[in-house]
Image (cartoon, rainbow, N blue to C red):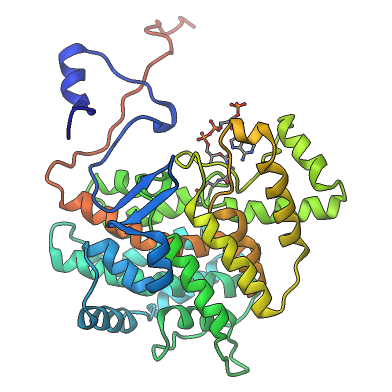
Length: 403
Ligand code: ACO
């Protein structure tokens, strides 16, 4: 709407011109009321509420409600939502056996995307994208079951037995128990872990039209159901330039430590653009000042490590790296600042998650955002199937050779 945007399809029809926008740096593909970002000011708001206030006061499920339904829930609405999600946590036994077919070495993100696709096969009868009750059921099932699938992907990689969900526990505590509990011993949830994980999940819940959310919307624009759309979103999140960056940051920090090369030498290699050497966890397409989530995550890193009594050299390396990069013109000129992923890996590691689970945690965090966008797209009468143009650069026409 407004003077600054043009209806590009009318423009294309009238003029025959098309735009080439590598990486969609200047193309809006949706009208949305969910999340507001001002990248120059470092502002992030969900439905108008500042992320700092949400992280301080809310829970994962309350924030999910806010994103999906647009307003804060009443106490009754939130209790009903929570109870409904708890009732849907169990996976069909055949889906549990689906994990048997996968190798132990499988990356948990591949397991997650394939298991979410497979999950949809159990609900073929309630996959309508136009029936509001079925859309609601898809919403609840995904929110309830993704954490269980994620924990099974973790247990699978460890070769440990899967636990059944404990629905007497809160969303986050249940997830911690499914990951760290065993059949052999009772599991006590550590409130420090629980609070920190809740906060990190909230910070990841939505980030408007990022690569995975745009993927969910694109797949959903074909009227594919929510399970298929979100399975595709998980695949998009897997890449190291997006959600996979949290795992990549930890390997970068470990490489710096193990190589003994020192942080300054590493920064020089980044600036020299050595092949494959990037400062992972730095830079963002939208934030050109600072990422407000990174500030909150850094506070949590210090709090969690000291509350758990963990001393980690990698946190020291991360802080040294941040200090050197922020004082260097190379990064200032390119507006490169730590993003949300820079410190998350250090916290997840202190909690006991292996690096291969880090992006899976991001996926659980982002799920409410994917659902909110899918539903907004699905309910919008102006939605059209996503079908970009191309600039064709190949041969125009050739005759098949006579042989
Ligand atoms: N380390 C070193 N240099 C960088 C980095 C980085 N992390 N990021 C960008 N640059 C440089 C580029 O080399 C380029 O330099 P040049 O102008 O001399 O050629 C300049 O900064 C602009 O970079 P682009 O790649 O054009 O920026 P873009 O907006 O396309 O990329 C991205 C954003 C993908 C996030 C990028 O900054 C990056 O690769 N960061 C590391 C991966 C990462 O942390 N991803 C997580 C993003 S947040 C999220 O998904 C949750």
